[in-house]
Image (cartoon, rainbow, N blue to C red; front, side):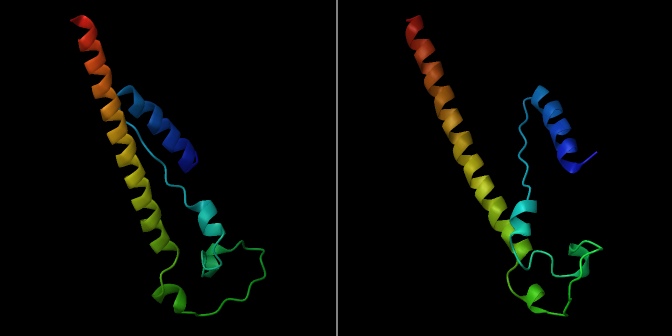
Length: 101
């Protein structure tokens, strides 16, 4: 089973308990970066690529650093969404209590 399928399964189970999950899939973003796969492990076995020992890939901000930025943005958006949902819930409760009186 792929990681995404496992995530979807966990998401369904968590939803039953009132939990929400978010998936941060960096695959497409990393494929767009020329330094997304600086070693032999990031290439298909049949690819004919010239590999260099280039420490710049490891010394400068790179793909892994971008993950931190993406995660931070995701957390910020989730915080805003959560705050908006709480405000809406509060408004809904106030409207219901106003109708009772």
